[in-house]
Image 1: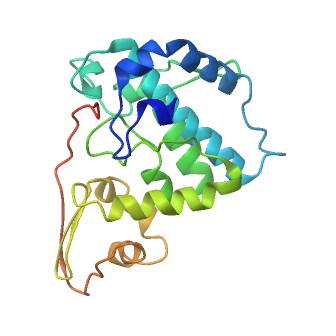
Image 2 (image 1 turned 90 degrees about the vertical axis):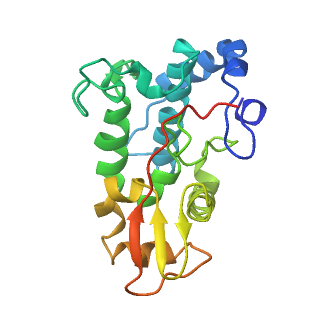
Length: 216
């Protein structure tokens, strides 16, 4: 489905997913019956599962309410982050338990695994998000997939504008700064993946986030 309905740049054909909804629901049902066992599943297996779940249920959320201009259109008028935003709606059924997107991202993925590169794999259906990958995540190639996603995102000039002395980076690095600075500062982290190496003392700012839908 991802290869059929997502282009290389990450834009999504949501109408295609609507036509393919039977297969999407079948996949979501399979996820619901295959929740990871933390005692027997490897770290890569668990992370791949939860990232796939987040991305697939985000697609379902958009498909269920299409057409819309932004995922934020699904917020209530009095939306409060981490209380009643669209990301706090418990519409995800996995293993007989209901989850919200925030439950999965913050309560499971970030809390359990301390892996900053997940921020370039989970997709919030918006233009400024890291691109939706054209394949599901899988344990046997998970490290390669994460590395590639991180490299692509950091060197995408529409997401980050990096020069040696002046740096404009995604708001993701502002929102989740502590995830990227456990073993150094933010510039140290970015320089691991950026083609252009940032000099010490460079001016760093955060780009506005474009919440328009990442549709084709």
